[in-house]
Image (cartoon, rainbow, N blue to C red; front, top):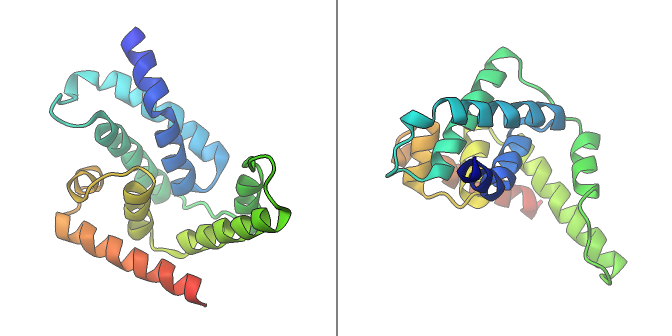
Length: 165
């Protein structure tokens, strides 16, 4: 039980951020967060010690996200995305214009992420937010290393293009 608590504390933030960014709706992320941990516990005998636990956990979550999209792809409104960012606490003492500028940048990034094709968005999130390497992303998504590399390159190009306009 102690081992599970340690794993849960260490990986809950990473898992939840991945699910929230992938699904874009807090209720769906909450549901799949619980389901991912349930499946991880149920499949604990299949975990290979040579694999990173984060990669294995995110692979379970990714499969659940794909299943969810196959059933019915949810659409987040701009207001819902904005609500997530407005709930983030700004450090005390920051200038209001700087906070607004950072909020605008986060909002533009959120919109750019929403506009990415699903495979590119997942690849980008796994790399940039979770720090996974190309091989680990390939393992999580079931895609080849070169495919992952291409998806990441296209995602970065689209995001850069969005910020240039």
